[in-house]
Image: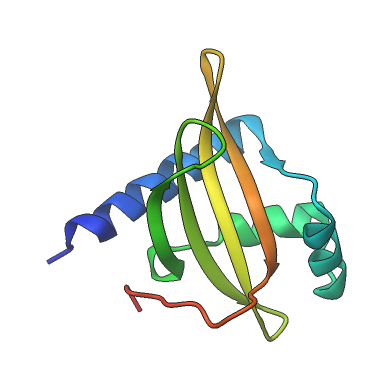
Amino acid sequence: MVDLPQLKSALFLKEFKQLVQEGGLYVVNRFDHQKSMADLGLTGENCKVEILGLSVTDYCKGPEPDKDRPGDIWVFGKKIAGREVYIKLKIAQVGTHKIAKCISFHAAEQPLCYPFK
């Protein structure tokens, strides 16, 4: 039997991936993202592919309220090139549209917890 948090994370990923397919992925431009992506040998397109490959078992935590803007934050993790990567995602409302937004994509600073693995 699937529990409610697992179902919520599955529904979030489904909507997020649909938004990426329809309108693309907005990645917040931060130095640590760029450095981590370069260290992992990833391009923006590789990053998008890795995010589209996320599953419920990659879930770490969320939803949690975004401290800076309306909406919720979801955290996932994934091994990429032998390193654990911290991935923070959000479905953001921009006017009348929703967008898929990657707020963080970098090497994890500490081990991540995966409650559904």
